[in-house]
Length: 175
Image 1 (cartoon, rainbow, N blue to C red):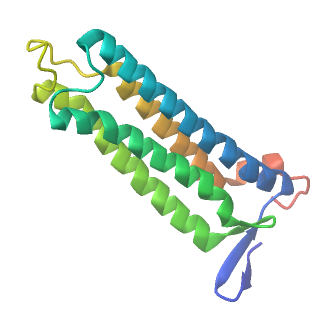
Image 2 (image 1 turned 180 degrees about the horizontal axis):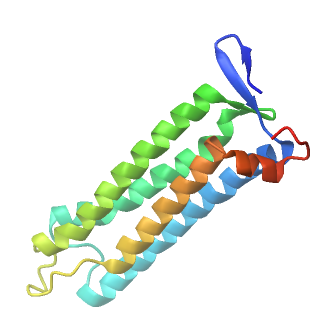
């Protein structure tokens, strides 16, 4: 099942799954980028209506508004690069392992940023026009979490497919 070519190990993939990785990573990555840009635009528009301006007054609030979407964009770029782990219909094990590590790091960092963006408006006063209200933006928080989780899970399927997934796409009883 595994062959060695120099220092690089290859794992054969069913051709249909390799095509799914090639095209699916592009579709998921580009959809995440477009969705995150649209979500950020919607959020700034709604905050402009509610508060009179798009971003919080405090610098910490601005960082809490901008950093989680940037984390999701990093995950989207990593999902886009999942196709570099393929050589023909073979998965390059070393590239897939580094992609998995990068995806896990970006996902955990994004979760930390989402938690921080949720806590910052509660702990600190970031909007000076509403001194009593210290509520986080739940639309951005939960949708950013959904984008990050979807991208992470899709990327992990591409770089570490399960045997059941490989059987599903296989035409041969090897799997």
